[in-house]
Image (cartoon, rainbow, N blue to C red):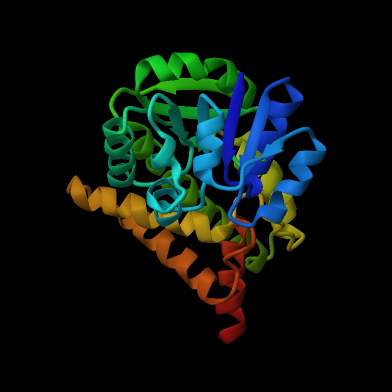
Length: 290
């Protein structure tokens, strides 16, 4: 199976390499084409434009940064739409349901097939093929894509009509962002109260709220190591989109709203390109200003 892949950021790069490692032929494109060079070393081909990739491949996956990027790749000159007839397009970016619906309608109007399939997981799960795939849209395309999904993820869900995958991903990331803020406050409170944050990590790992995120992120946060597995600016984007989804459904979300403000504060401090756990630094900034 030959697969096109659009977008070689932290996630797209890891996912493309994983497909190549498992014997898939992959043709890649990135807005900055020089980012394709490393993939070529792993055996990938390069398409000069999104349209060129879609023309060559029966199925094309996109993993892009935000809704404007996802729309641009489809609708701009030399975009996906120009070659969509008869082709399968799978957008694994985290976007809102309206963006997915616009892309789906345009692809189907051109005679193509569309599946949204955002993923839960960051850099390490992407490298290890341990993502959770939240797909919705064309059921036949989902079934055809399962061999690739089985390489990329540990579990795939088909959630029905387009928009449901986007909504599920936003709910997941809203919970994750809210948890990260509470975790950061807890680490800071423990330290400022004269307790050992390292001991707090041990206690949490043995408690009912033990989870992989605390286990993975806690030690690096205490070392002030925020090498980006999931950039903070993308987490804040997802919080914003989740809050908009809450508005649409009249759901009060005060915890998520407060978490979003913390991520915005972190971005204002220039931390947007660091890992989302760098929201911890906003508490230090507050401490320094007192």
